[in-house]
Length: 264
Image 1 (tube, one colour):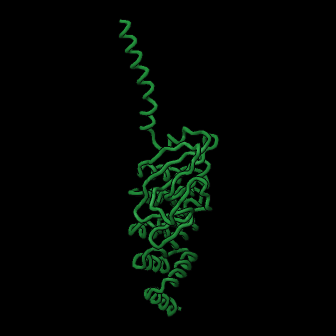
Image 2 (tube, rainbow, N blue to C red):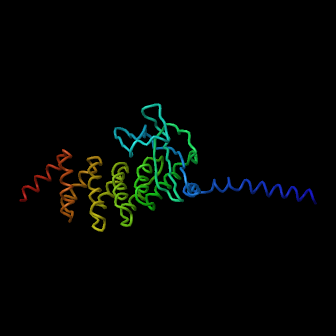
Image 3 (spheres, rainbow, N blue to C red):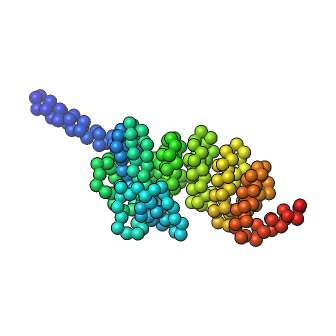
């Protein structure tokens, strides 16, 4: 009996010791980060094909994005452009997330930060989208771009919700619209057009949607801009659509200008 009690006690102790590891594995990224009250948390994740970067310069194809000031205290690079992974630093103060830093490639510098290691791409995207949808101010704004480059993650429905959510900060909403226009693919045009004509949406957000349409491939963007220039009830948005059509050098835009001028 005494031996049985010893063995039972040992097994219970072993299960207790293993429980935190199992619990941590089942927790979401947000929950794991929330366990750090003060300090920094690091996590890495795979990026979409074609993304590369060094310092605060991040490229996809011919496009180039400068993501904030060059605060490379967390990462160091040897080459001009690494294709991954994505590296996110989350700053925690008094139980709140107060800052984000994002990098592409390179290697972590030595630090006492809590390192969560490689995170599955969908989990990383979910965490970043959650910040965009719920975090305050600059943190929410800075969460948008990294979410757009996570591998195999469809973040666009969430960003459409952000763009339409009047309770979110305006800068967050315009960031969502901008990246929707830059990277969402063919389906972006319909969503952007719908935003531009929705009078319940803040005018600045609708203006950003018009600009985003000007950045879409011409066969998608130009017809949408022509429709806005012809029919939108907001004269300011019509003027913006006409301005971007004027920059397009598209014959369809010239045809529209001719028709409008001849009406006078």
